[in-house]
Image 1 (cartoon, protein in one colour):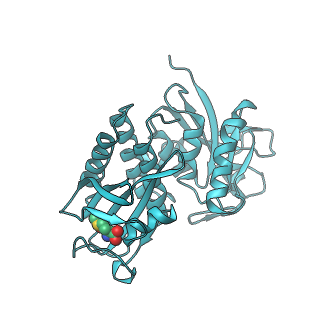
Image 2 (spheres, helix red, strand yellow):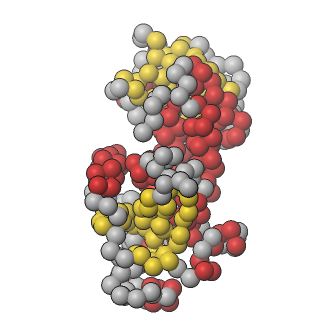
Image 3 (cartoon, protein in one colour):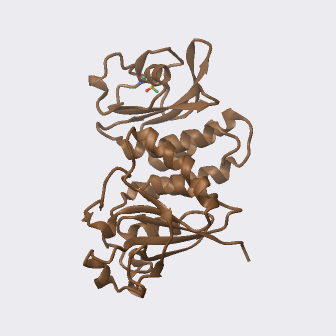
Length: 310
Ligand code: SME
């Protein structure tokens, strides 16, 4: 029997949150329920729906700590919510849809807090996400469990792309393991991203001296070298941030390796504080990439750049 620990995540409507965490490698069970309310008895969905019982729609995530860590689960949670939105996620509003991380043992707080603070720093604002000990949790009625499996067309506030990216991220993690060679890691990431997402061009440029030099990629031929601060790639390197270009014709200095490229995203790979490479993705359509893509592609870039993943 695997060791089991639990963490409770309120992330808006529990149907989607449960469905997402159920698919996370290392998660043993995800249970939809109601947490941190002020009734001393099992509430019904109707009780909670009144928005007067203090309960939040919450998912108990039981996991094997040998396979997935609490910091990693916390990061995945942040990837599927809007942490700045108070009492509203997707189309749902009310205190029952508030966001919260509710922990059991006190020592779990010290594992969650660095990721919580990093998220707040990344967004440059205090989070609307509660971070509190779990006071109570009641599993929801049976028809709410695995709701989206039972009702595949049911409402889910989590974008479908998150489920695709989660699979991709997990497959890449399993594939890379502790492979120490960066080129092998980049080649695997470029091939997997290219094959699954079918973008026009997906690949890496490595920082070598004063230039970005072409690395492993999937797609048509591309420029071999890009200068510091030049094009979208050189800008992401210089500014050490992800650059999203909805329309390449409107980005001054865009380097057109392929005339078919219409929009682009470039994510820096940062290791021990230095930009060591960039992940560059081109789409043949305009407006392909948004903040959700940025978030997942940053996770994928970090995974590629690091040999030991927490
Ligand atoms: N468009 C990039 C150059 C690289 S290719 O897209 C593969 C840029 O402006 O940096």
